[in-house]
Length: 175
Image (tube, rainbow, N blue to C red):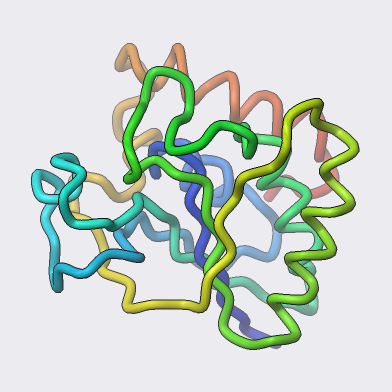
């Protein structure tokens, strides 16, 4: 196994986590907070917008099964990387589009992926690309949220369509 890590933020972490839990080669997808100044933030802290943290998903994957390029293809398909600090009705810096990388080769690959995906969007991609900061796992009730609350309104109206879009566009990447 060739285990790698990437941390992605694309709005509410429940959405991104729900998608990546269904991706072949993803070993774990953990809802978390990253990119802010406050150590060990809580959901309430992050929701205030005062911590600087984004809601992210800490993804560990087997690079022998799925490449970072493929992970990024999914990322740019299941969220809107052209809206600054917002995804749909979720607004604030905690919902920003962000990719945290671990080394310069990942950074270069991410920047090339953004250039490649820009052709799919009329507006400019505003995804933040930054070096991997400290990542703080979110509270346990946020983990695997979609699967534990599938009939809840937000899950049906917001998450389910993103998951369906992923399954339709990437059937060969399904677990």
